[in-house]
Image (tube, rainbow, N blue to C red; front, side):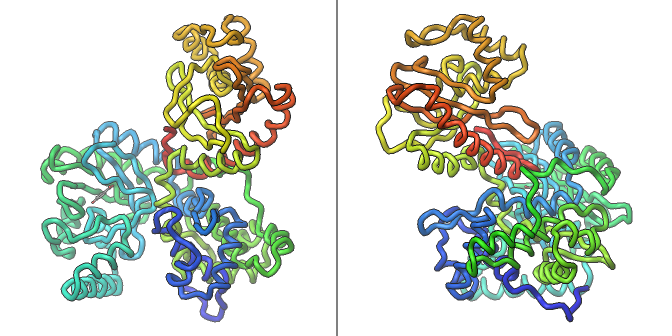
Length: 561
Ligand code: PHB
């Protein structure tokens, strides 16, 4: 229970309100004026909140447009880390999805809603895939009937009030109701359930008897799902484990028959994985504690809301909680805040539904995922890289690109072209032989020796210009150098007049997953000078992309291309 004698931290409340208002919008659709309307805050307040969030790296301001950044996912990651969703859980659900050849998800109860926390999706023409952080109403999905088994009278009453209000508005003016429901549940396809809604209480009674729950096209035509509970040591439902399919592959009852034995076996295994588990490595460089906010305050003056920064530092620190949670002392120490300050932040987070405490111990709650996590978890690697490529191109006034290895080629996945006309026309999807390019060398250099040799043998180098290095020994030495130096160059080896400097982009385990380059005309001075001038900027950009990638990929699969 929260202590009413503790005052809330207003700037933290306002910052959270702004993040909520930004979250469901299409990327870049929102401007400060929209936030004023959505939150009811004064324009000057919104501006200070946005400036503070931009300084913290959670919001990117481009012209008038506001964008959430992948870095913001570190808030949701704090919840996911604390709730024991380790790499092992993700690997297990992925394996089960392979075995069943259907999408598999884990969801947790969030208020009366159902919040997705793990997804292993099969890509199919006819399937909705919910993302980590998406919220569904309990009456529209399989897990809802399981979670509602544990509702108390107050929760049932709140749910009845909400659904009755929706029915009433729907009767009055259907479009308004649809809009209301889609604002509360942005992941839900618009419109009513295709075949009407069975009574939730009846579904709950059935699932209590059988131990599983069914979604027979409660969300959209054709979509069916079956869910089983994963219980904690005390026997309470901790997750719902669901398998999702389509009526073109299974009938609803057929799905249950086909999936239940393996779903149940897996639920038993997940239940045995103890709550106290090592989590995947924390994202990027360790975040500075809240004392960082003092420096920012000095930099930005009254435009910087120090107590918003501190509150978000406390929220992130909750990510270290395991099992029952962390005491105030530990949270104050982790954030280097006075106990009283940390306590007010926690109180504010509790009031907003993002944290809870049991006796002395505080823990984060799944509602944190409403702060932009679902839209951001849909980002591809290219979308993560693009803003950084634009910044790089703005700084060096030359084209910058990111490529991945595709067989023996490099393939462009993102690019920011400089305004000046280049001699080559390159777009996303363009391929070049890896051996003749700086990016290809960085990518080949990142491979284990045998794999590198296999690729070089599969497409024996040939001269594309008079300068292309094709001799096996010389190329091997170039690749070893690239691996040792952490960069590579290519000077007019792909095309006369064009040269490039490249550095690797690594995943959280240190594997090279992509290459980043700047390409320029060969006429602009000696290559060594250009390389020395570009390398620091290239390395900084690669590090910024890596920080975002590691944050986004900590609990989520980021598609590389
Ligand atoms: C899903 O994981 O996409 C899912 C799970 C349960 C449902 C519907 C969809 O009832």
